[in-house]
Image (spheres, rainbow, N blue to C red):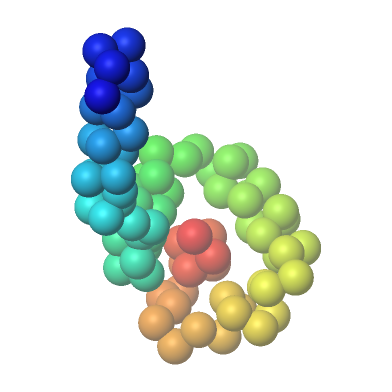
Length: 78
């Protein structure tokens, strides 16, 4: 392999080697991050989040009656 291609080869090899370690968050990880973010919001922001997420097409089907939801509407939407 010519020397001029070595940096590219090294970069691509590193990307391929580490790509199996990268994955999307699962359900539990998403809820943990959402609950941390929730604690940072002020009341007007929480109210706006509810307004926006109620308009989402998945609201009625996925979020409104989820069995793991608590009484806080904003937190359950996140």
